[in-house]
Image 1 (cartoon, one colour):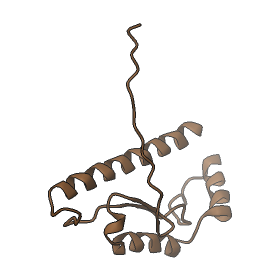
Image 2 (image 1 turned 120 degrees about the horizontal axis):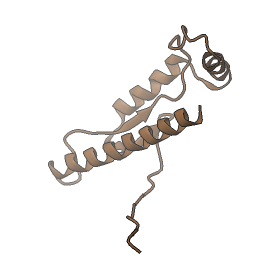
Image 3 (image 1 turned 90 degrees about the vertical axis):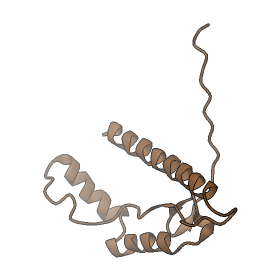
Image 4 (image 1 turned 120 degrees about the vertical axis):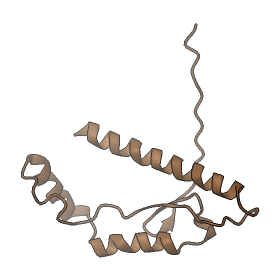
Length: 116
């Protein structure tokens, strides 16, 4: 179960990095400081739906409990997608959650020298 959550987190991080890179490429190819296409990344969060309706395993039971406790309606989740579409240039390359632009965190990776 933990592996599933870790894979989700890594895939979400890769998505954010991909959107940032795509946004920077789009900005380079357009007029300075005014992208011709706005690229952002948004998440509707956990939404209640019938997506897991046929899962009768313990995972399905846990999912149903979590949905009841923390998930929002699909209508509320859809509003976050509309907010991402309607967002202006300030959202270009950004991650959006709960209809708001998330804080930008700079991340850099350095390769370790394993030859010593």
